[in-house]
Length: 442
Image (cartoon, rainbow, N blue to C red; front, side, top):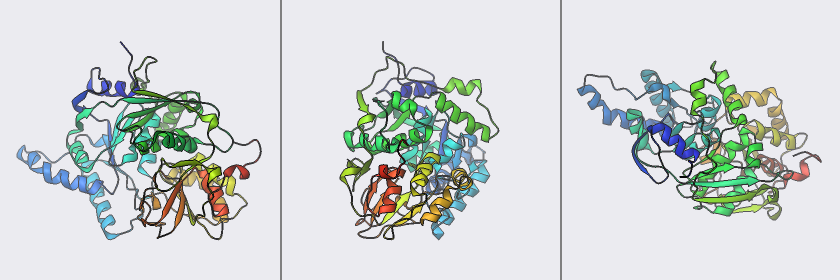
């Protein structure tokens, strides 16, 4: 009998018995649940409306299933961009205070960055949130995916997902050393271009191989983050020393340590696990890559593209961590943003922002002519801090470039790595970053 994938093992641990891909499980308990200020308010209101009578009838106060396993992380339009958003943030803050739930401040960062940085999500857990890019936590070796408002409401009450189908897994085996100027973002855009928008529909994208093993956590977060753009249920990387070192540091920031119980949660796929498909990727053949409008899967080598760009955005839950800002600053140092281009830089969290300030990276961006904003999702989903107008062309380090994603449906969005973004900001057109990297540097 074949072994189990990491996804199967995580579900098996949660339900207390062996679970196999394709099996429908009546109820699966989740370990962690988090909300942003977009879906959090309606989920809370629905929870109060639908469950208060049940609790009142039994003589109890309305109470979530476990406040220590829930968090609210306002990030999409913060600082608040409207009266409605302010009301929503006040609503979830009051609810969090009443229930004893962790409530993060505006500017603490993007939810998918905070969840890992704060060791809220840990390896081996099932983590869900009301946002499709929850899959980012798969880099930790967690089974993490997005849910809707109704599921979020029910989870507040019960802590369980109902009629859950254990997903099948596609194995992406990646070997080969990156060429100079190629990064994790180029790899995942290449994969999206190969697989297409529906190429991993409802499946787990599991990444392994020497190339993945050599990546830092920032690169792994990027790969898992974008995998949902080929319709994957989620993505995951088997935990290793790099993972555990990251988690131990995150726990230490909270005055905690890696315990035997936490180590016991760590799961890895068996060598003889059964996959629905195996895809071999040679990273050594990949060039710096961009996705052209209007699909993340519309990927091409940057050497084939030189379209003019009016806005460059370095930010989002996909590419705004330490390694991302470091390479962008290396390219921009001593150079200026093109007069025809607006550069927006938004670090992914307050911790990253402060780190970049201490390292002098924010000064590099400011000297180059960038607009630097406090940590939030920014223009990524077209609500504030750089909304695109008709005809605008934006090169973004984010994860989606559908029509209307960042504002006007008549705008054009390109996706690329922080290195491509920095080079593009300098030239005012989609540009190859390799010409700006010193010889011998990655």
